[in-house]
Image (tube, rainbow, N blue to C red):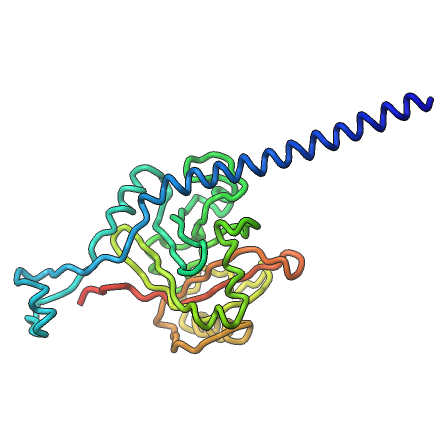
Length: 267
């Protein structure tokens, strides 16, 4: 009887060791896969482009001299790297960069908010998934409020470093990010950091259309923010929320909210 119990204990211990080993191997495999695809797509990383003139005269001369004809206009250049990335990976909308964090990734949009939770750009299973915008939003960021989601990876990848904004000094000194689309570029001016719940029906509403609801959203953000700066946001602006998990309480979410301003707007 003792021999049977001993053998059972040994088998149980071996099973635990085997399972733990598999878990460690699987974590390592996923990290390698995530690093591999991120390294591969970094060649598509866009940079800010200078505007071009729609007027036949030398635009650079006009800019230096300050003499602009009435029909002179500056328009944004296409972000060719995004165009190329979209040709290779269906679902890509653009690229998100937040300086002084590890947030420097393309983002996608699926048919629902579950598709890219655990799929990478190659449509392979991935614990980290892919950063994605809410499926209910317009991909051209024409909505009043756009939501972009990413996993809070303990390695700091995806939206893992969003938690750095849960520090007032960091929040105060890191005020902007950038959204690159194929034919537009937006600066994000961060205005609020908050920790909330996924059932916050104001923050997690990408279909805000009426002026009353837009004002209510801005008031709610100001009232519930842990850190907030007044940037003069109004119902006429376009807002963005970056969202990820928080471990402060069960099922918590942390959000970083900002205003979108198009870079080099056409006149």
